[in-house]
Image (cartoon, rainbow over all chains, first blue to last red; front, top):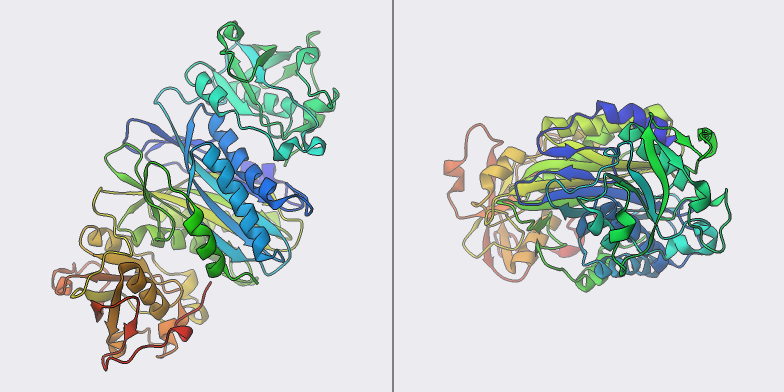
Length: 289
Length: 289
């Protein structure tokens, strides 16, 4: 098995970014200047049978998951999704199953007003199934929410509830937090979506922002079928984890998924602390997908 | 093995295209309106070990091929490439080999002033290697060259020489015809790049334009190591095949790859004829990758 983080860490710093790249690799989306009144957002994600979904999973649900993961990346920037492209490399899958997968992705995209504008389909010589979806979106200049903008004194919030996403099946049926992300554009100071576990993703946000986070672990909102501490590291929640000046909960629109304050930004360099000031150990924070 | 064309044919008509999609699936790139002074181009392509390159292929050359195939799609629209995103799903590949693949793709992109702005890397549970690259580019409004604009009386041209690309290794080392494509923006009436065989791609252009093509088969320019008729169907040439008003060769810049006139557009609905007016049979036109 490849250690994808180590490899990407060695690769990404070597990638020179040319004109028009406002934010390159490392955030939920790249932010691109293409000459219009809006900035363009771009992200790509993969979905692999046996890794991100099981062979017995309904292929329409798997296709929807791929689209929704990408929509969640646009939400985490405060953006609006526009266009997608879909590729599939499939080994032993019957044609009907591939078609059902595509229709699941398309239906999830249509719910967010996203058109699939291109794609490619190829046969894998081995067994297996690997799909990718690239997503394009837009955001007003100055309103994209990166991971890196939190500062000491901000509050830390999360939308919805987390935990037990995989075994409950919620990883196949979650709603990407697009309306919440758009409300937070220009308001949140830092944001990402919870894909690899709340604690691991919180540590990433803290590191990108060069701050530490003091977490009130007992306030982290859990699904009824999830239990702490495991739920803090389960991942695949696709809720938005974000920082904003304290008091945001008072202006939070009722029509949106509720938010919960779960901590405070303090000076530091990527550490997570509990309310007693004890360091939360990093080695068991979450699962690297 | 999936029959990708049949599947895509059943899927693509069902894909609704929303606001901002000037050209959806089916051309070399989608053409997108994002509010700026330029139209955006988007395409995606896959590269699979055992299908598009061999296990013994230099991984840097395979990575460059993936980037260059996508650059060729931008060239075939008359556009300028800007940004790319790269995904890799790898089974048994050592990390170093994956890194070399990425560096090959990055180097080929840099030669065209293209930044890799995002990506994803994941482990495949089975053997195998599958990479995708999505490319974004731009073109002036009204200048994108689609497959569908040819009309009777136009001449048919091809850049460079074709044939024997796979066994000669040229499929790994070709130069995408970006400068030629940009010169043809707003001048060519229809264009695509030759990926699946000159005759098959010519038939696609004819079908999209609702015309027929009368080919002077003996004028098709071949590489010295290629022989007709096989070369007409070899594919992976990545030359530009395009229609334009006759006489374009007289204004063709010397600095560009030379072009050859190989036929004439006549009324029809997708047929290919030789100079005797005999129908060229469709069943052996090329190879579906």
